[in-house]
Length: 383
Image (cartoon, rainbow, N blue to C red):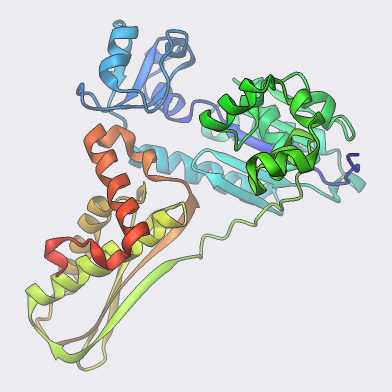
């Protein structure tokens, strides 16, 4: 039996974020089939407008297939710098108005209003926040208010685009019941096929399967899916703090002026923490390089970048910062690199920059490193 909660959680989602930003830059694009992604046939779809989705187009689809499905679609390569800038703008708007919020991706947020209902209407507060975001950024946003993160996210997906919905306490199961099991986060293609083969097509049917049976069928994941089907989710809203970072630094055994050695160390360290970044399912929006000379003078230089987790993009920035820092031609004692402004996300945020081959290459690299160890695969320049 679902225990009623006093939590007030809202999930906010910037509708078709990449597409919306492009339409702000060029209003003529609004209402037309629009695809954001790599322009060549080897590229993939990063995002598409609702008009394009009617032709069966979806993110991560090969661009060649998308062109065949909708020849009249307009294709834009995308600008990650613009997307990062708008994402940061919306984050600032939310941070000014909300005491506790979680940035779960470049275009999604959870806000925790638990306790605010004693003084303010959570419904009115969230509606006003939606209006503020639309006014100050120009971006459309959908949201849902519920007792937990799971139900609020599923509900938001049901009211897109530019919608809003509140699921009253105690109505979590009632809301979820008629939905397809594919609407529940965590149910992938293989699990869906297994459940559908058992005749389980709706969340209501899934919720009625005994928890023990689900555990026997799918292990811990089965128990968690049973909880989700019953609208149960105790996960907290994790406060967003931009000061979180991933970093590494190296003090050399002997001070050095060997530029090739320093470049190799920079490559090795950047590659290492970029892999750690992806392993944690995060992207970075800022890179800092640190240099300490033999006389202990320490200098740093930082650069804001479009959110990414890709080695080749991070290395470009790291090398540029190093060249700007290393201007004295003195012996170097220490070299360090740090990624900050972290947000949850994955490598596919940069789909419009890359080909299918590049994406598969990164997936293969990370798979090898996870299986055999990070030291088993390195860039030649880092050796």
